[in-house]
Length: 508
Image 1 (cartoon, helix red, strand yellow):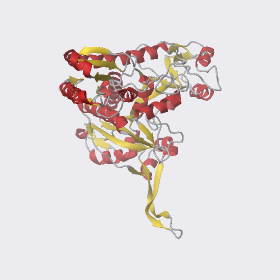
Image 2 (cartoon, rainbow, N blue to C red):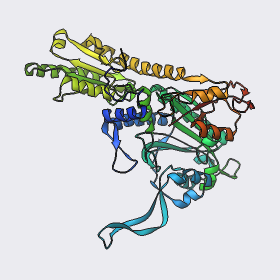
Image 3 (spheres, one colour):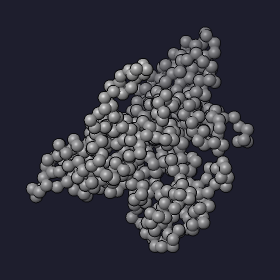
Image 4 (cartoon, rainbow, N blue to C red):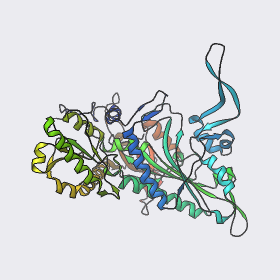
């Protein structure tokens, strides 16, 4: 097929203008839209359905590891931030601050804030400080530990260059906050959550990732250690898909989280925090989408099977609809990935082609057509979203019902393998500064083509080198791998000794 002339549902194509393709996929799938509040988004039902599935499945994993949910205030007194200097400095430019209460009408008939607050309130950019205040009251003895709490909430970080799902002023997330008796326990928690995140995105979102530690300059403000999972999307950039932070005793000191240890002495707690956000939906789009829209892994699709009645003649419509409803009922009695299969029968009075393309653009894993001829054969026409959009397979109804979990599993696996092969094909071991710069430099600077990827290269640990690369190429260290088999060598930028290769990439 000549790709320059092939008609696609999304224009422009990925290879023509990836950022605009991304926006058009979101619009076509009705995932979200910009709101009237600058930098904020409206998450539409289809997009929110994806988030609800992520939330439910991730929450089950948290609960299985002993964590429980709570809720803490949206507003944080400014003085709480001032207690942790490095933390407040890291977030200062992103904070939204409430300074007044009440509105009054002025002499010109316009509404204006009336009463200044005695202390400004920061709208939650993250909750370490306000949660720490509660923990300081709850923790008295080592017997009160560990505290393993998560909250599902919204946060606000003032965003200058918003992009739906990837960077918005307000977004949704979960944030875990734990307190432990010992440093070893807190570090073990940090790694436990990193592994949980890796498993979640791999098994549920079909996203392969690199895992490891952030360099000092990329750490969460106030953390001793930040661990991260990094995904490569189809324009070969990295997306930070989840982070887990070992905070040492920094926040415990700032918040006064102290306990009597087993020797009867007062000691500060060891804390962690960790989070994943609605950015994961953007990651999914960029990882699995094609030029006809998003492709959803079955485990997180709001609808896994859509049944499309094909009944152009009124005299056959009732029988076709009845067959569709019967099939839907049978499918809903079947489980896939430990949950009932989600089925929709599209009864809308629209042309079959229009409905079919709408569901293609929404990324539903399986589309099933039933028409009068299919009724005669007791068969269905099945299309998989991970295959060519015009590909169909006729299948006896009973065979289809029996095979649905297997087919959904096959789609889930194929999306993961496709993503992993893409990542591996665009991950390169680089041995020289020239090759590194060439790898990350587009051939057309005026309108950069898709280029680069993940580079595995030696680095001497210098922050100055890191800053230089960031300034020159907009490339950062995504993770320092934590595997047990480091490969010592020489830094490709300075020639100095290097303990291991690190992962470099341009990122969102």
